Structure formats: structure tokens, C-alpha cells
Image (cartoon, rainbow, N blue to C red; front, side, top):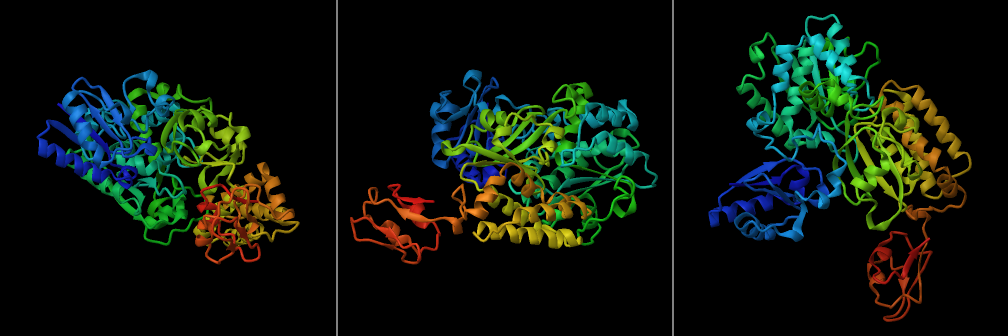
Length: 588
């Protein structure tokens, strides 16, 4: 019997996956087609959603992209019933020479089961080795030996700072305390980031198993998953997975006949970005306002309710079962000297093929953008990439050969972060981009630190003035001075890194700031107040469409006669530019 898999992560659902599923169920029932229908999570190539995969009796896989309900009948009739694949809709098959290059350079460890198994089926997870690693750890290794394996693997925390995971576990294990906790930080708040959400939706059991192994290593018997409430599908699948694991005896008392006990709770966060910081997250779980505190003591020494606590993020925990199953050397063989294993990135922005990718450390930025992401949309030029979200920085296209490595990325002024990668093209204004991220961190500041609360506000006001055409000499130096004071006088990562987008754009795109300030122009033709719109008479056909969409009547001209824009009346909304079908309207 053939199997049909349909990707129903959030990306698949938003593209219309539930309608395709309904069409499949209806047609299968009506025609009594002998086929197994199953739901999976995100397959990664989100730019081709809705994705539907047909697997025949011999295990051959055919993936269809951009599937709509009206395509379902033909796929069933030809591929399922007649073994005749619909060639023009196929995006991936067994022919390796024709395989979509989106997958060619990926190495999937964290995403090994995403888009492969039914995330609601514990049996499918077990069939792929699931919960074998915690059993192996309990039966073969002491907690100290488990910690040593993780340490030897070189696994760094994938949540941002890149601290060695095994070392973190050791600190928690060695900390004095009669009670210890494990926390999974799933408070993914970076704009453009969806790595943790997709992992939780597509393979929740791998995260639970990683937490179990960490609990064994650290000596904890209680754990929390702090996940944002804006991820309803992830929350639902986590709750279901915890129940299923409990029914099998994988959670609770005497796990696998050992002395280990573990209970896992879910805490839904309210979406405060600052709660991604460890101590603010802990405060939120405790029912307090999510605000960071001074460190030390670190959470490993005194964390949740004053007890030693280990905190890692979703991606970090999802790596752990694979490492225990395959050994530390297998993981350490991937990557660079200082950055081992793989890294999951959410490709977004002006990229041709956006989605979720997992690549070996050491791959270059250009390889990700061009070989995997297919380059820049609409034939535009690659300008920069924002890494690390609001806490990160912009890396220019000239540094595209830079390897994905914690130390190398940090040297640029950006950070690896949790894995957001927002790609920008020649139409992106770097001053405007810095303003966007600074506005985000300014809004998300908890307000505890004066420099974060007021300093980011002052920086944002300067950036707004520059992009409005009111920039003045000394603004750049004032931005740099404020940035240094904010970085040096705030207690948590949000404030310490908030200036990064401004500092990196000043470092690599200082000329854009100077042109904005001195010439009152935006080189990317993006900042509305600095633009001038005018009509090329030799191209204008007098169709009158631009005049009809202008909200202030700034465009004049007779029918089939060249039009003109009154610069004094124009409010620079750009609607005429977007509407013109003859490229007769230009902006300067």
C-alpha cells in the first residue's frame, strides 16, 4: 500500500494544507483508494508549500510542491493508482542528479524526523530509534559519563551565546541542592525565526528525550518547557507527546526500571522577548514579572525557586539523543575546530527559496544563500544578511565567504544567535533595517535598566530623524557613544546586544548614513520622506491609473496624454510607482 504524507506544520497550514488534506480525504473515500494518509511537520522547503509526498511500496519517494485542492485528483489517479508521477509538479524525487539543490548540502540531525514522521505518533518516533538514547544512557552510563559524552561532542548551546552544553550540565550536577530542575527555552522571539517552532511541531519527542537525558545527567526530577503561547500547534503537540510518553512509562516514576523519576510541565509564555533571557524566563515561570536579574549566581547554581537549574533551548536538546545514539566523535567530526555539529537556520527575507535548513558548521554564508537558498529574488543583488535577530548584526555581501562558526561570526560584530537569517538585497536601506530592529528591542525592553529603557529610545529617535531627512552632523558619533554606554551598563543580553544592528550597519555601511544625513537621499530608494517621484513623459501612455490611485490628487494629466506629479502635493506614498504598468514612474 502506498503512503501519502502531507506537511502540516504552521507553514503548511497557512499555505492551505488543511484544504488539501480535506480534498485528499474526500477523494480517497469517494473512490475507495487503498492508500495510507498521514500528517507530518515542516519538511523545510517552505517556499514550495503545500508539500505532498507519495511513497510507493518499494520506499520510493516523490514530493510534490505548491499543491492545491484541484491538483489532488490527478495525483491520486496517476501517481497512486497508475504509478505515473505527474512530472511537472514534482519538486523532489529519487533521481539524485535532478534532486532539488535545496537539500543537497544539508545534514539533518535536529530535523532528522521533521517531515518524516507523524509528530503525534510515539510509535513512529520509537521506530526510528526514539527513546533508545535515554534507555542507553540509563543502562550503560553514569550521569557523569553522559555529561562527558556531551562535552566531548563539542555541542554548544544553540540559543545564542554558544556556551558548551556539557560544561553547563556539569555545573548544575556539581551544584549543591536537594532539588534540581531542567528547563527548555522555547521562547523563540526573533523576527523571522521559526526553528524551534518547526522542531516542536515536527518532532516533539526528540526534545522531550533530550530533556530526559539532561535531567539524568544533572540529577533533576522535574522539568519545564517554556513555550510562547503564539505557537498553539507546538503547544498542542507537546502536550500530546508528554501524555503519550507518560502512558508508555517513559516519563514519571522509575523510568525504564531505573531510579530516575521525571515530570515535565509546560509553561506558556505571553510573548515578551526579554523572557528569552534565562533569569527573566525563570521569573516568569515562578509567576513574577519577566525581568532579568544580576548574575552571578547563575541558574546552574541558583535558578528556578532558588534551586540549581539547567536551561537549554529546543535545538540543543534535539541534538542530544542523536549524540548519545551515534557517539561524541560522530558529532565532533562535523563542523570546525571551535564549532561542532550542525546548525538550523530559518531563511527569510529577499531569498528566492525561504524555509528551514540544517547545515554543517563551517559552511559559508554564500553557500547557504546561493546553493541552498537559490540566491536573491527577482535577480537583485545580495547586499547583506542579518544574523542573530535583534541581538545580532548585519554582515555585508563582501564577507559572503565567511564560515558559519561561532568565533568567526562574533568577529564581525554579529552573533550566531538562535538561527534567524534575514537576507537583504540592493533595495534594502541599512539605516532603515537598523531602525526596524532597534524599534523591536526598544519596545521589548523590560525597562529595568535606565540605559536600555532610555538609551535605546534616544538611539531610535536619532534613526527616525535620519530616515525622515532631518539627520544632522554628529548623529553618527552620538549613536556610537550611546551604543557603547548601553552595552556597558545593562544587566542582560537584550540591552547588551540591542545596539548591534546599529553598530554593524555603521561599521559596514557608514556611507549610507552619511548620504542620508548630508545629501538627504536614501541610496536604496527605500526611505519615503527622502524620495522624489516623477513621470517619464516618453513612457507615460496617459492611462490615468496612477492619477486614480493617488490619495491626494498630486498627479495631473489628460487621458492618453503624459501625466506629471506635483512635488509640493506629493506625500510620497509610492502607490503610483507600484501601480504603473509601463515603468513610467521612477523614484530618486
